[in-house]
Length: 176
Length: 289
Image (cartoon, rainbow over all chains, first blue to last red):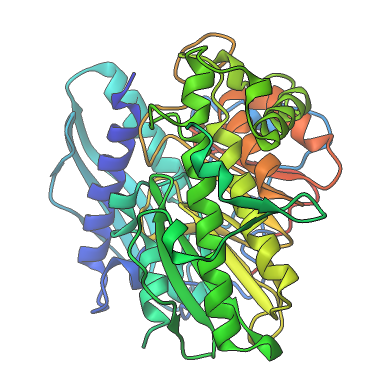
C-alpha cells in the first residue's frame, strides 16, 4: 500500500527529468516543465475552459457521476500547422519499481505529446499505477513562473520538506 | 501543570486568545525578525506544528513596526496552540486527554471548542472527517492547524493591516488586496510534478489541499481503517481554514460521497484530482488564467 505515492512520485520525477532534457531553457524544470502558457502556440483562451481533453484516463469513472458538480475540462496543447513536430525517446529511468522511458513530441517550443515508449515493472500492480500517471501528464500544466502566484496549496509538507518546496522558493524571492 | 502553555493565552471579548508578547513567557523559539520585501511587504517563516508557517503581511497605514510586532504575537499564538493540541508531545493537554489522565472539563475552554468544531466538520462531511476514528483516541490534528491559523490571521486583521497571507505547509488563509489589488492568487500544487501547478485560484478566505503525495499514505479511510488511495489531490476553499482543512481531508478519503457532501455546503467549493488523473470541481470553484 505504502509504495503507491512513491511509485507516482518517482515516475513523475523520471518523466520530468526526461522532459527537461528536451527543453532548451536554462532555468531548470521550474521554468519549462511541460507547455508554458506563454509559449508561442499557447491557446489564447483559459486553460480550464477550452475544448475538453481527448485523453481518457484508463478506468476513469469519475466523469459519469451526476449531482451539483461539473467536470473541469482540460486543454490538450494544440500544434501549430507551420511548425514541424519532432519526437525523441528519452533514456530509461529507474524509478524504484521498474524502468520507464518516455517518447516526447515537441512542436516548436511546446511539448505536444507524451507517450510511454517502454515500461518494465517488477509486478503488474506497479505497471498499472505507472500507466495511470501518463494521461494526466498530457494535460496542460501551469508553470510557476507564469502564474504570478503568492502561495501554493498542497498536501502538508514537513519542516524538512519545506526547504525544498515551492513555497520556500517564493519566500526567498521576496528578499531580493 | 498541563495548563502551563495555555495559561499564557488571554482571551479578549470575542473569545479570540491574545498571546502575551512578554519575552520571558515566550515558547522556546529563535526570534527571527520578519524581512522587508520588495513590495513593502513583510515576510516571515516560522517553524511550528511540524511544518513551516509562511507569513506575508502588507502593513499599509498601520506601519512596518506594528506589523513586525503583530507577526510575533501571531507566532506566539501558533506555538501555544501547538503546545496544547500536539499529539506528538506526551505532556500536551490533548495527549493527556487521549490517555484518559484528564477530562475535557479539566481543560481550557478552547479544547472543547475545537472538539465541537470537529463534531461539526464530521457531520458536514458525512463522517469522512472523523477525529474519533483515528488510532490512539481523539485526534483533532486535521482541524486544529487551520483553526490556529484562523486565529493568527484574526489578530493581523484586527491590527488593521492592508493584506495578509499565512501558509501552513500548503494550507492557506488570508485577507485583503496585496500590491496590484487583484487579491491573493494561489496555485494548487500538481500532485505528481513537484515544481508545477494543477491550477490557480483566487483566495477568498481559506484554501486547503490534502493528498498522499507529500507524506505517504497517511490518509486513513475512517470507515475501513485502510489507507485511502483513490484521490491524488483534494482542495477545498471556504470561509475559514479550520473547516476547509478538515473537509479537504474528508475529500481525500471519501471519494464521490465526500465530494457531494462538500458540494452541498454553502460557501465551500471543492477541486479533486483522482488517482486516475480525472479532475472534478464544484461549479463555484473559479480557476484563474
